[in-house]
Length: 464
Image (tube, rainbow, N blue to C red; front, side, top):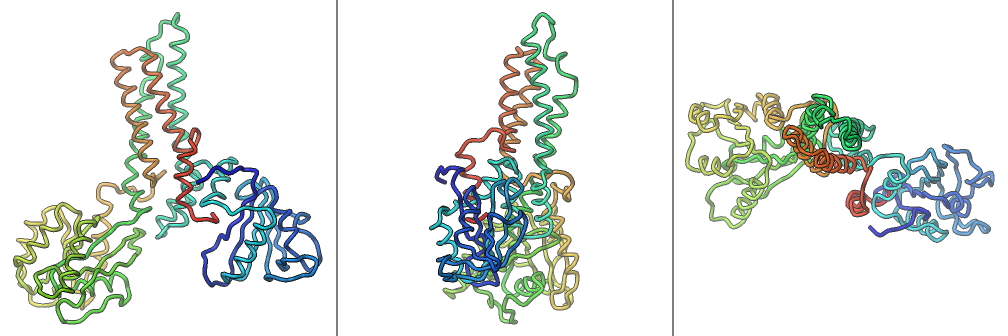
C-alpha cells in the first residue's frame, strides 16, 4: 500500500462489480461534499453541502451540471464529520447496479478531485481517526467474510470491542506492575525488592488471563477460517450420497455403479455454526482407468490437506486391504468413522474397527434410509471442538496476528515471573515488562508501524 495523505479525498465502488439492483460509490474526505455539489442535481436544486447529516436525497448524477447531461438516477446519502464511518465527511451515491453506470459515476468523482481508494482505506481511516482500534478494524474484514451465524457473532463481538476490552484490561494490569517496578528503581531508599513491590498474585493473574485468550484461538480460527473435512473411502460406500445429505441438496451425481465420482467435489456447509469445506472424493483403490487414477490422486491430495476425515465403510462387506490402505492415509488426523448401509445384512467386523479407531467417534448410519444423520452431524461437531470448546463465551481470538502477539506477551510475563522469583534486578524485569506492553499494544494498535498497517488493510477489498 502506498503512503497517501489523510488530506486526500478518496472514492471507490463499495459493492461487488457486476449486474445488480443497486451499486454504491462511496466518497470520504474533506472535499467529498464539494465534489457531490459539482455532479449531483436534485429536483429542488439544493446542493449536498447544504444538506443535514444522515439524510438521503433523490436526484441525478450529471457530467455537465449546466446542460444537465444525466449519467444515472440516484439516491445520495450525506454523513458529515465526525459522526461517520471514517470520522470524515462521507457521501454515498446509490446508483443502478450496472457496471457502466458505476464506472461513469466513479470517473466523474475522480475527475472532480478525489482519488481511487486503496484496499481497506476507508476502514484504515476509521482507525487512524480514532473511531476503531486495530483489533476492531480487523473485525470488519471478519464480518465481511463470516460464513456462519457463529462466525458472524464472533466478528460482531470483536467489532463491538469485546477482544479490545479484554486486551486493554490486561495491558493496564501490566502497566500497573511496571509502574510498581519502576517505583522500586526510582526510590531505592525505600528498600523494596520487586517481590514486595508487586501485589502477590498480580503477575499470576495476568498470565492466567493471557492463557485464557490464547486458548480461545482453537475455536476462533475454526470460526474464522472454517474446517476442511474430506469424505473418504472405497468406491461405492456412499460418499456422494452422504455429501448430498449433509448439503441438504443433490449436488453430486449418485449411481449404483462404483467409481461414479471421478473428481473431488467441494462445497461449503454450515454445521451447527461451524463453517466446513466439505469434500466428496473419488473412491480410493486400484484402477487402470486414466481418469479414475487422476481422481484418486486428487483424493489423496485433499486428504493430506484436510483438517479432519470422514472415513466411510460399507457395513455389508468385510474390511479388506483397500480399507486398511485408506485408514493408513488418514494418519493422525481428526476422524469420524462412518459405517454406512446398516439397513443391509451386516458383515463388517465392528470390534476390529473399534480396536483400530480407539480414540475416534464411530457412527452407524443408513444414507438410503436417512438414519442417524443427526447423530453424525453431532459427532462431526464434537470432533472439531474437542479440546477447544468455549461455545462463544467471552472474548475469542480469531486472528493469527493477535495469537502471535499474545504468545509473545505470555512468554514475556513468564520471564517476569521467573526473574522475580530469582530476585533479579528491577531494571531487568522492567525491560521484559516494556516488551510485554509493546506486544499487547500492537494487538489494539497503540503502537503500530506502517508495514503492519499495510499488511492488515491490504487484505481488505477496495471500497471498505
